[in-house]
Image (cartoon, rainbow, N blue to C red):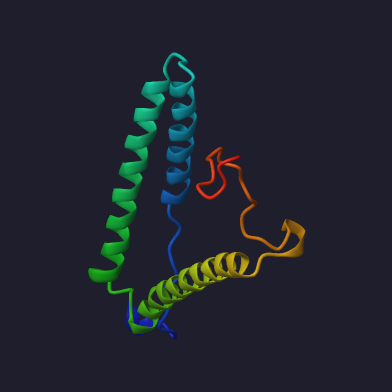
Length: 135
C-alpha cells in the first residue's frame, strides 16, 4: 500500500470517533449540570456520558495505534508532525510562564503612577507603635 503512494504522508480515513467523542462530552456536561442541580436522571446521564467518552477514547487510540504499527502509515515524515507539535506546545508554555512572571515582577518592582507609585497601600492594622506611647 505504501509503495503505491507518491508521497510519504498519511491521509486519514473518515472516522466516526470525533462526533462520538463530542456527543459523549455533551452528555457528560449536561448530565453533570443536571446532577448538580438535583434533576432526576442527572447521575445516569453523567455516568453514561463518561462511559461513552472513555469508550470513544479507547477505540480511537486503538485505531491510531493500529494505523501506526500494523498498517505502517506513520512514516518518518508523519512522525515529525506530532514531534514538532509537542515541541511547539512546550515552547509556547515556557514563553507564557516567562511572560507571566515577567509581568508580575515588573508590576511589583516598578509600580505605576495610577496606584500611587507604591506596591501595596499603607494599612492601619490597629497595632500601637512601640516608640509612641500616645497612639
